[in-house]
Length: 397
Image (cartoon, rainbow, N blue to C red; front, top):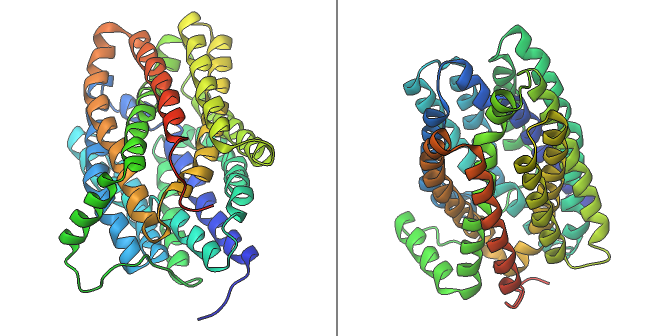
């Protein structure tokens, strides 16, 4: 087996998350606005997003097991190809049924990818006795990918002038080509799985092991709590900006760029702050900033107020996401990185499924402020759960 340097391994992992971030930016800059443009209302869009999250919940844990059993890099590369096919299907859709089919494909691709790159990278670091290298590299690489990926918002905004679906098609093409590259470069690694054990039995055994651990049960509650605000934001912000604030749809691309730049700067700041303070404290600071950003949404309907709140929210989200990665894996067995993180993601997707279906309809009736207030309350719960998590014993230090 060929040995690779830390630099080459980190570069390869950085390439994976950069391509994913950039391609997802070409899709995400206005995907709800695209569905809205093609005649779907926020209630129907919420239903579609909810179904997508349910599908991710169904696919997530088994695909995490596949990554641990057959190879994290292999499953990641396959996921990129499937996810790219989902982009093409989405861009061609113009009815509820077609959007549903495209979301099924996207959900499968997303589930195959989720957790696999990080599990591959952390295992490679662990094999080289350089596990703590993650504290420096995970936020830094995330920051680089977000900074470069921020261009996707501007590019997508301009491409959408030609055709609303064009950015989505280009994103799908990039994902598929990159998936092939990932499959055939560098060595793979796996978790410790019994090759002769039935897949269903393996899933049930690992799920029982996950639920038997007190720290993991708290993490599941934390995932469920923090995803509430994220789901509300994803469902609402694009339509809120256009329909309530009065922005033009082309400005969504610029806002998406601002979002990625804000998250990128937050990731770089996290990399620096980790030298000074515990990652858990940075996560709490990030959650607090998201609350402040949403409070600004509640206090004003001006474009300047919305943009300010948007930047604060995204900067806080950047602190949350980049710091959470650095301490989450300290509590997870390194032989089950993909399985456990997939289980946590499945929890988030299940909650998002329920929220997307009901919140879309509630916002139609009650208004956007109901969603913002609900998000704030659950972010406060998230902070309380983090305080509880901090008391649990870490596995990897």
